[in-house]
Structure formats: structure tokens, C-alpha cells
Length: 196
Image 1 (cartoon, one colour):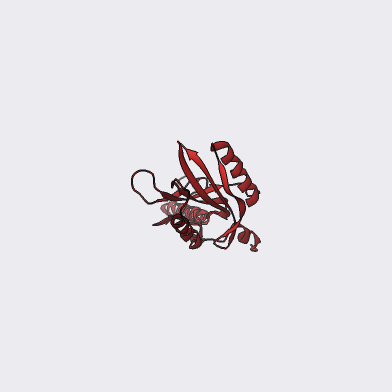
Image 2: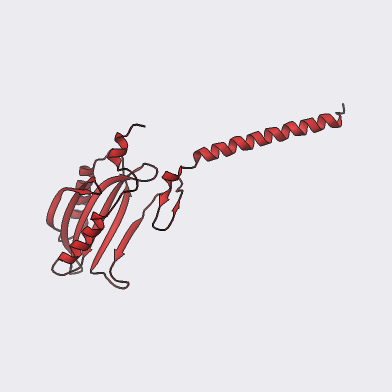
């Protein structure tokens, strides 16, 4: 049986409407899965949407020299963690790892409470010898979260290669970074207390 041209035109129009509706629904589904602007990954110069599953292993390294070892460096690192772990447990675990990894490790100041950008933190200071040279470190650690609200352990480490240990000027430079630090999103504890 032959259909009329009007029937074919009507069928084509119905198929086209169904295709357009399917495309609209797919676009809505895709738009709903794209993170909101506050969920953008931030760097110094730009931001972008970081796909789920892409791990951020960013370290910011600040030095005083372009070539060779710097007398002072400040490193800011972030490590994804299990959300069930608390700051004290994470800090103790890191100290145990340091004891295993660094030969001739000497504690200058044991693990103690501190604050970074209004957030509970832990502070530790130690030194060790690396290839016969003294290395002095001051480290602060605290819990935070990334743009996907995944928990992070943040570490700010100042490292001095001065043979007498970290100088007063180096310590002042380190704390000038720490004391001016501002967090872009609420800390982990504040975010958990906020009603959804």
C-alpha cells in the first residue's frame, strides 16, 4: 500500500520532532553533569572543570634560585585522603613515614597544634643529613577539600639548607606565606557542619 506525500511529510515531521526532543533531553542531561562554576579547579592563572577521576598531584614549589639548590624553598602539596581519617591520625602516620625514610632524623619541635587560615593544623620541625649536608624542615599540615568536596591533606613545608639550621630571615619568609594564606572554599570541618 502506498502512502500519500502528506503522510510521508507528517511522518518525517514527527521523526524530526522526536529527534529534536531526544537531543534536548541529552543536552539537559550533559548540562546537569557539568560541575557548577564553584566546582572549577583553580590554578594561579586559570581555572577549568576537572573531570571526576582525574587525580590532582599538584605541588607548588617556591625557591630563591633558578639553578642549583635553593637556600630556602617552600613547597605546598596536597594529597587526597580517606575522609574517615582525622588530622591527628594523618599527622602521626606522616611522622612514622618520615622516621622510616630519613636517616639521622632529629626532632627540633615535636608535633604540636597550630592554625593555618583559621583551620586546625599540626606543626612539626626536624632536621636530617642528606649526602652529608644538614637539611632543616618546618612543616604545617591541615585538612581541606578540593572542588569536588573530596578530602585533602594539605602540607606547607619550608626547607632550609643553611648549615646552622633555618635562619630567622628564612623562618620569617616561611611564615609570611603561611600568615597570608586564604582558603578558597570552606575547610573540611566547616563544610561538614553546614546543612545541605
